[in-house]
Length: 111
Length: 111
DNA sequence: TTTATATGTTACCAAAAGGTAACTAGTTAC
DNA sequence: GTAACTAGTTACCTTTTGGTAACATATAAA
Figure 1 (cartoon, rainbow over the protein chains, first blue to last red):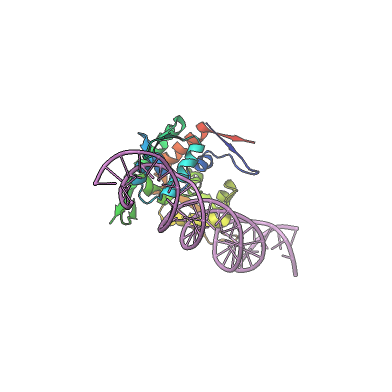
Figure 2 (figure 1 turned 120 degrees about the vertical axis):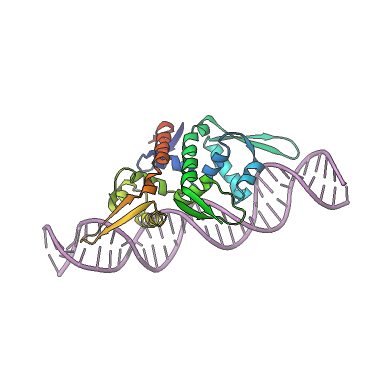
């Protein structure tokens, strides 16, 4: 469960609220990448090659702050960090699945 | 059906593809607003008060170019313009419904 | 001794997104 | 004669987002 503060005159719309958490160019893809298993930072980065490591770090941090995933750091050399969806994050699976389905049914990639 | 050109090295991900069409701060809310009926420009604007008219115009134009909605202009005074989802736009309803459901189940607005 | 490793951080810059305020048009109501 | 109406457009600015390149770290392998 997530709490969002409203500003004056703001309408309490469920879709608007959700977009405050997973709106943005990369967050749904990151969550989609983690939907069925935990992954290391490098794995996520390799699977989303157009996303720079800097931005990936930022987005992961925000998703963690919003309670959608956990970050587990192992103090090894070289370092290892694993990201995994929380229960709240997992509850997004129906949304991600519908997005995946729509993309598969309606998008043709060319070239 | 939508065609998206890939750049070199890009992965053909259904979620990434969908985000190119409806990613962004406002597009899902606009589509959600039109999910069950056609609406005039002013109606949409009134229902999304934090969205400026300038940005609404831009977003509607992009959604029209991407084939998700139609724009019907009546040459009356004062002017009237109606926006309505196309079949492709309507095919997004399952996604929008899951987003709505998740928002209603998981978000508490405070204040 | 140098290089490679994984996961970052930092400084700096460019591009995209979004906002406000002023302006437009042609008819109707005051 | 002036204001209100709707659906924009335009100019200008700010904020957000995103990118690149360099650096840090501790150990192991060459």
